[in-house]
Image (cartoon, rainbow, N blue to C red):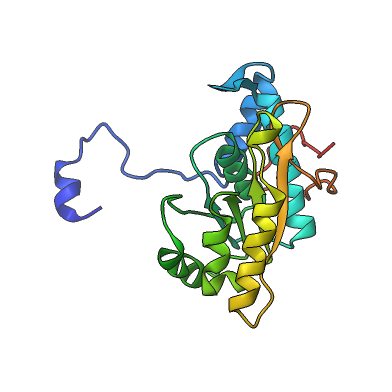
Length: 219
C-alpha cells in the first residue's frame, strides 16, 4: 500500500493479508468432503454433485499429468464456451498446479497465435466447433495434445470424429510440421463429459493443492 492509502485506511482493519499456500481446487476438495451429495451446479442437463465433479477433475488431472506430462507452472488453454466442461477443465488444471489460460471461444485463428506463443501453452481444451480454428493457428504445433470436449447429452451433441479428422488434415496440408494430436472427451454414464482415455493413473498428490485430510485417487 502507498503512504496515501495507509493514511486513509481504517485503523480497525488489517493492513496485511496472509495468502494460503493453496489454490481454488483445494477449496473444491474441501467442499466435496463436507457436502459430497450437494449440487455444485444446475444447468439444462440437470444437477451435478460435488463428489461427481471431483471425480471428473481427478481423471482429467491424471490425464494431463501422467499422459501429457503437464507440470507445475505449465500453461494450458481453455478454448470453450461456459459450461460443465469449462469448469472441470479449470479445476483439473489447478489440481496439478498448472496455469489456466482462458481464451474467448469467439476468437478465430488469426486471434489465437499470441495466446499460444506468449504463454508457451503445452495443451488445450477445445470444442469440436473450434478445433479447426485452433489447429490452423501456426503456433498450435507446440501443443502436445488438443482435448476436444463434448456435451453431457445425446450422441448427436458429441464431437464429430470426421470433423476433427478433417481439421487435422487441413492443418497438415498447410504446415510442414505434424498437427497436434487430438483426444476426444465424450459422454459417460453419469451424464458428464469424460475422456475416452478416462482410466489414467491416479494424479500424484501435491501439498499446495490437496488437503492433507483426504486424497481423491482417480477410479
